[in-house]
Length: 172
Image 1 (cartoon, rainbow, N blue to C red):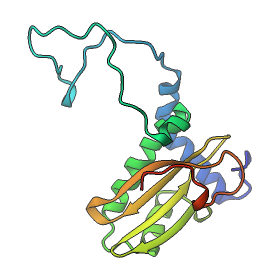
Image 2: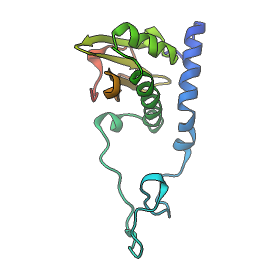
Image 3: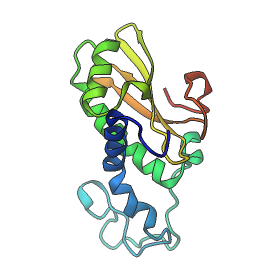
Image 4: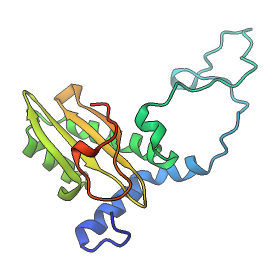
């Protein structure tokens, strides 16, 4: 979590975090006020029936998850990016043992010192990723289980070492 990576591996990890979160830079800078766009459904098609009047008030998003409420906008956005790439990679792992999960996460650029709690539970492997940077609190809690792999955001202390039991909130 240091500001200056001290090894080439840490520098590559920091570069990967920046690349994954790159789409989030514009999301954080975008205005958060109401837009004049109509609600859309799948594939960008309007979800209003012909002749139906759009609501006068802005549509409020669902209540944020406990982890989402404690993460910055950038961390919330980055979390989605990490989740998608991790799930895609881990769904392809047959018999997800801790060693196979670690190898897959390493292949995505996640370094061993940020992978925690790898533990096999039946045919699944649970794990945590410490993705904190620049006073952020983002971590991810995951379950590698083939097609039903899931990764959800969690919240870690802003400072200090990462410990699985210290995570404030997770969905796994």
